Image (cartoon, rainbow, N blue to C red):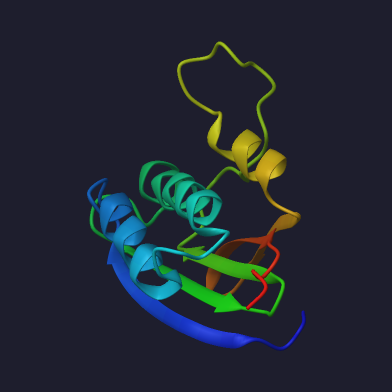
Length: 133
């Protein structure tokens, strides 16, 4: 990964309301005029929702969100307790759920999921162009 400026880390409760806390955290860290704000906010919301609904962090466990600005891309890590299933993209556009990772795949430059003893990390990167001064 490119070296970047760590904008912040927040620990969230594994409850559905944490998605809105995560969105506000992104807005505060990136600022209203950031060119990647909308995409990063949407993808963070989807990733945190995935963690609090599908991972062992649900029901009040912990989810950690980290965001860094790497000059021409935003790098985000969403870390949860893992679970029995591995997150994957579902191809059904008309299903009631399961479109979150499809959005991550579509809007991000790169993304992946990995697991270790500390839990599971969904990470993604969103490219952007800095405005000319």
